[in-house]
Amino acid sequence: MTKKIPNPIDKHVGSRVRMQRLMLGMSQTTLADAIGLTFQQVQKYEKGTNRMGSSRLMQIANVLQVPPTFFFEGAPGQRKASGSAPSPTYVSEFLATSDGIALTRAFTRLSSGKLRRSIVNIVKEMAGE
Image 1 (cartoon, rainbow, N blue to C red):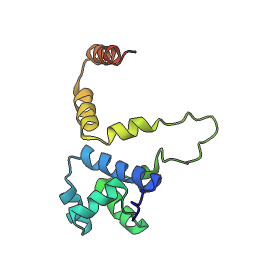
Image 2 (cartoon, one colour):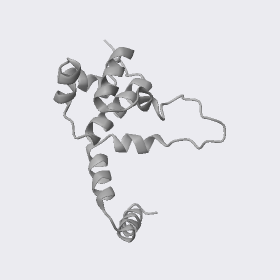
Image 3 (tube, rainbow, N blue to C red):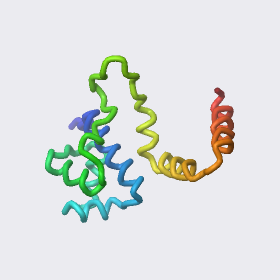
C-alpha cells in the first residue's frame, strides 16, 4: 500500500491555518471546538493530509479573523500579477512554525530600531552572509 502524498496547495493552506492560529495564541482544541471538530481533524487540515471544503474554510477564516483569501496567499502554482516579485515560500513556511511565531512576536516587541538591525546583522553573520 502506497502512502498518499498531500497536495502542495492543501499543505500550503494548512500551514497558513496553523500560522494564523499560532499568531492568535489559539490551541488546536480551541479551534476545533469553535468549528465543531476534534483537534485531530484540525491537525490533519494543518498538515494538508485532509482537504477542507469551502464551507469549512469559511468557518476557519471567521474563527481566525482573516478573509478566506488569506489561506491562498503565496500558494504554489499561483499566477503572479505582472511586475510583482515572487513570494518566497520559505518565509511563510518558517512563520508557520512555533519558532517562527515566537521569534516574530519577540522581535516586533523590540522598540529600538537600532537593536533590531543589530540582531539582524548578528543572525546574518551566524548564517554566513
